[in-house]
Amino acid sequence: MPSSAENGEKYEEKYEDVLAYARDIEKKLYKLDAERMRLYQEVVQLRRELEALKQPPLISATVLEMLEDGRVIVRSSTGPNFVVYASSEIPREKLVPGAHVALSQKTFAIVEVLPTPEDPFVKGMEVEEVPSVTYADIGGLKEQIVEVRETVELPLLRPDLFEEVGIEPPKGVLLCGPPGTGKTLLARAVAHETKATFIRIVGSELVQKFIGEGARIVREVFQLAKKKAPSIVFCDEIDAIGSKRIDVGTSGDREVQRTLMQLLSIMDGFDPRGDVKIIGATNRPDILDPALLRPGRFDRIIYFPLPDLESREEIFRIHTRRMKLDISINLRTLAEMTENATGADIKAICTEAGMFAIRDFRTKVTFNDFEKAIEKVLKRSRRENPPRIYS
Image (tube, rainbow, N blue to C red; front, top):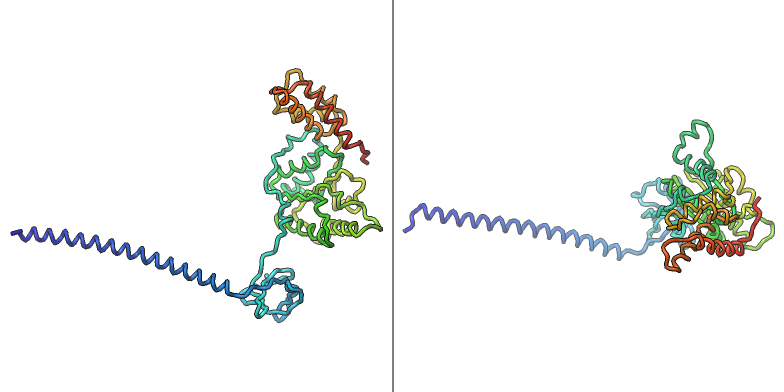
């Protein structure tokens, strides 16, 4: 017969086994309880969503005026104006004229303040991907680069200098000159060098079909710029909306003039613009409206001339720095052969010379390739862009 000590050991082992089993059951119970709570919360959430889906739709409206008794005058999306009450949960400081709100379909009470709508067309004008162009990629425009940096960069980076001197920083700069002289290229470099939000618009995009659409886009572009300040608004081909106003014209001309007046009002109106700088670019400064050119709107007008001999050589050096050139090529000679060529022409010449080498399955570009490229590009350039006198 087993002794009492052996029986005690058996009972102790069974007790330990039972205790371990009880602990295991307890852990499983905790897990099941946690899973039950998770499923319960999911059921509650699904019930809330179901109730929300069963509710009638809300009506969007715009706040027009706040009355002294707490009621609000709103214009609904369906057309008529209503005097309604607002929910006590909505802060009164949010119910300002112009705010977008949601109305209950049953009582027409304001139950929610909606976010300000943003036009995707305007939102798409913001340059989110920083251009790779730097000031080192621009040849022959040293004076123009200095003036643009003084007008655009310096007020954003060192506003204290202007405060100490006691002057207001320039508000805008207009870049003008023949096509292909580097106006848009310099604007890309400004977008790369500054940490400000860069918004690019083309003048022709502001010419809209419906009355008031162009002015609305201009207004919303500058609202976006003010919201994202410090910011830079670059208006390319500004002559599309900034031409001189005439007394007689079509309805389309009058709509363009309305857009121009909205632009003039924003550039130098009663409302402060904040840290928003404007860069305009045009090939035809001679047709711009005088009101657009006066100080206070464009404080600096920077002319981009055709590059001289030294500038052309520098531009050739920039565009050939990654090319494999034959030892016989002299950039000074190429610059002498391209009189009256623009920076865009020189870039096209370098590309065409490389294409002639690729056509012959060569990895080095020869002087003969450049000769053929110069003849091809400059003949086409003179045919498409006849010389024009800029005053």
